[in-house]
Image (cartoon, rainbow, N blue to C red; front, side):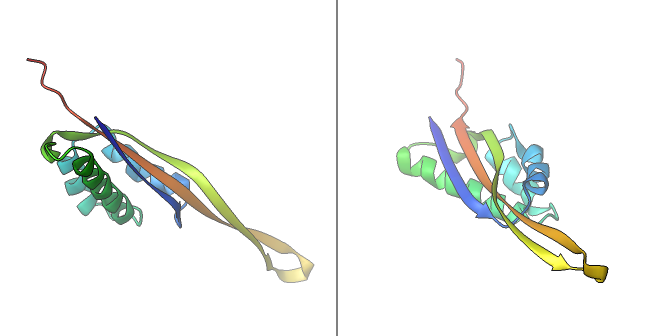
Length: 115
């Protein structure tokens, strides 16, 4: 059984968020949450809350599910809105500033015993 959680328009560039997402992909939830607690990236707290939300969604769908058997089946970071503005510079020039945002989605699945 799959459980899903997503968050839209996180004020972090997708490239930076993918660095954290790649570290926890295909791991058990407990291991991922422990690793996220010690990562010094701005996205780690957001992804940690998102995984906890996905676990809560899984327990809401099926109350008999054991959270220790859940693992991160898929986590992906998509590009969101980009705020663009211009910063004036010397001699009549201008620099363009892009403030990127991202959408993060987590899909959890339960590991089944093959006995």
